[in-house]
Length: 107
Image (cartoon, rainbow, N blue to C red; front, top):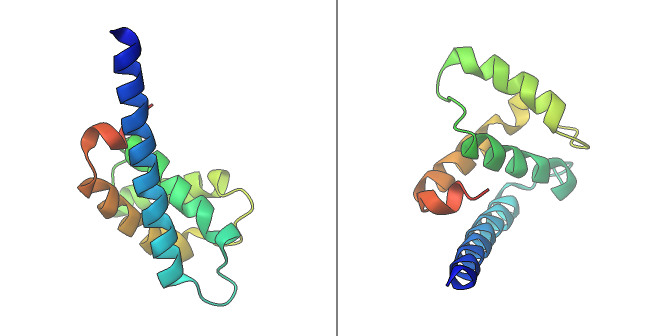
Protein backbone atom coordinates (compact mmCIF):
# COMPACT_ATOMS: atom_id res chain seq x y z
CA UNK A 1 0.00 0.00 0.00
CA UNK A 2 2.82 2.41 0.73
CA UNK A 3 4.24 1.82 -2.69
CA UNK A 4 0.89 2.76 -4.26
CA UNK A 5 0.72 5.98 -2.25
CA UNK A 6 4.24 6.90 -3.27
CA UNK A 7 3.42 6.34 -6.90
CA UNK A 8 0.28 8.46 -6.69
CA UNK A 9 2.20 11.22 -4.91
CA UNK A 10 4.98 11.11 -7.48
CA UNK A 11 2.44 11.16 -10.29
CA UNK A 12 0.77 14.22 -8.75
CA UNK A 13 4.15 15.93 -8.39
CA UNK A 14 4.97 15.16 -12.03
CA UNK A 15 1.61 16.58 -13.14
CA UNK A 16 2.12 19.74 -11.13
CA UNK A 17 5.64 20.18 -12.34
CA UNK A 18 4.34 19.69 -15.86
CA UNK A 19 1.61 22.29 -15.24
CA UNK A 20 4.20 24.87 -14.19
CA UNK A 21 6.48 23.94 -17.07
CA UNK A 22 3.58 24.46 -19.47
CA UNK A 23 2.76 27.78 -17.82
CA UNK A 24 6.42 28.87 -18.03
CA UNK A 25 6.73 27.97 -21.70
CA UNK A 26 3.47 29.70 -22.63
CA UNK A 27 4.38 32.77 -20.61
CA UNK A 28 7.86 32.85 -22.14
CA UNK A 29 6.39 32.72 -25.65
CA UNK A 30 4.26 35.72 -24.73
CA UNK A 31 7.08 37.71 -23.09
CA UNK A 32 10.20 37.09 -25.11
CA UNK A 33 11.52 40.20 -26.72
CA UNK A 34 14.97 40.87 -28.10
CA UNK A 35 17.63 39.93 -25.55
CA UNK A 36 15.15 38.29 -23.19
CA UNK A 37 15.89 34.72 -24.16
CA UNK A 38 15.07 31.55 -22.27
CA UNK A 39 18.44 31.59 -20.49
CA UNK A 40 17.56 34.99 -19.03
CA UNK A 41 13.95 34.22 -18.11
CA UNK A 42 14.07 30.57 -16.99
CA UNK A 43 15.86 31.44 -13.71
CA UNK A 44 13.01 33.87 -12.95
CA UNK A 45 10.43 31.07 -13.33
CA UNK A 46 12.51 28.87 -11.02
CA UNK A 47 12.83 31.78 -8.58
CA UNK A 48 9.06 32.30 -8.60
CA UNK A 49 8.45 28.63 -7.92
CA UNK A 50 10.98 28.50 -5.08
CA UNK A 51 9.85 31.71 -3.38
CA UNK A 52 6.18 30.76 -3.73
CA UNK A 53 6.81 27.33 -2.21
CA UNK A 54 8.71 28.98 0.66
CA UNK A 55 5.78 31.38 1.27
CA UNK A 56 7.86 34.50 0.80
CA UNK A 57 5.86 37.59 1.69
CA UNK A 58 4.87 39.70 -1.27
CA UNK A 59 3.05 42.84 -2.11
CA UNK A 60 4.87 45.30 0.10
CA UNK A 61 7.89 47.52 -0.28
CA UNK A 62 9.72 46.00 2.66
CA UNK A 63 10.08 42.59 1.07
CA UNK A 64 10.86 43.92 -2.40
CA UNK A 65 14.44 44.76 -1.43
CA UNK A 66 14.83 41.33 0.19
CA UNK A 67 13.52 39.66 -2.93
CA UNK A 68 15.90 41.76 -5.05
CA UNK A 69 18.84 40.61 -2.92
CA UNK A 70 17.69 37.00 -3.10
CA UNK A 71 17.30 37.30 -6.89
CA UNK A 72 20.89 38.52 -7.17
CA UNK A 73 22.05 35.35 -5.41
CA UNK A 74 19.70 32.98 -7.25
CA UNK A 75 19.64 34.32 -10.81
CA UNK A 76 22.55 32.25 -12.05
CA UNK A 77 23.36 33.15 -15.65
CA UNK A 78 20.42 35.48 -16.14
CA UNK A 79 21.50 38.95 -17.25
CA UNK A 80 18.30 40.52 -15.96
CA UNK A 81 18.00 42.65 -12.84
CA UNK A 82 15.19 42.27 -10.31
CA UNK A 83 13.37 45.26 -11.78
CA UNK A 84 13.29 43.44 -15.12
CA UNK A 85 11.88 40.15 -13.76
CA UNK A 86 9.64 41.41 -10.96
CA UNK A 87 6.48 41.41 -13.12
CA UNK A 88 7.22 37.93 -14.45
CA UNK A 89 7.73 36.61 -10.90
CA UNK A 90 4.54 38.26 -9.65
CA UNK A 91 2.55 36.82 -12.57
CA UNK A 92 4.02 33.37 -11.93
CA UNK A 93 3.04 33.65 -8.24
CA UNK A 94 -0.53 34.38 -9.29
CA UNK A 95 -0.50 31.37 -11.61
CA UNK A 96 0.87 29.22 -8.80
CA UNK A 97 -1.85 30.55 -6.49
CA UNK A 98 -4.40 28.99 -8.86
CA UNK A 99 -2.67 25.59 -8.83
CA UNK A 100 -3.63 23.05 -6.17
CA UNK A 101 -1.90 23.69 -2.84
CA UNK A 102 -0.57 20.15 -2.63
CA UNK A 103 1.02 20.60 -6.03
CA UNK A 104 2.70 23.87 -5.22
CA UNK A 105 4.25 22.65 -1.98
CA UNK A 106 5.57 19.29 -3.15
CA UNK A 107 9.05 18.80 -1.73
